[in-house]
Length: 272
Image (cartoon, rainbow, N blue to C red; front, side):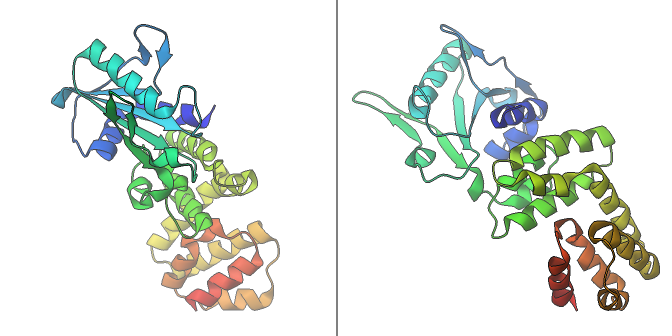
């Protein structure tokens, strides 16, 4: 499944969430329209009809900036076809998924000698991750958001995926997230953080921490670290054993992001 198709699937599965994100409209009656447009066969990535405001939200997901015809002209073409077919205002948003310096990612209009058409360009690498981390529908897009530490962000995303209680939803969301994260991360890291067993361990661990049982939390922490890194040096175990429940919780919040012993030592240095 391509990156664009994952986004289209998410928009069709959770149209109201995408409407709220892109328009701040709390519309409850949202209908996903067919994406085949009239005249010559042409498909838009996702077309969502906001019934309460008699408006169409047209979303285009772009991984590449080059296309034929160019993106600005395509947006004009889509807008005309949509207005002709549905006879209502059209709000258009082009969402660029992968970071680029190409000026087209900041272009928001088509202009020639007689016509000017405006649309909105949105760049995922400039978006605040907090909005996406707290929303099941948008969570798979979170790894592409603005951050000073991409690895830490992916770890946060993995923790959010792990908290999804219903297994099918968790697996589906993890699958969507893995594909989109591929635009930014190595496959090995994605699989390490989003594997089913690691996420399940995180859920159990967080549950123990919430109960405030230091002894059980310590026992489970050591077991997880042994499974992750093999036999742990006694000096490291001594440092972990004196941690409070709160400090164990701080360690646990970044457990999924620890890739080696040096990372564990750095984390212990920061919380001790």
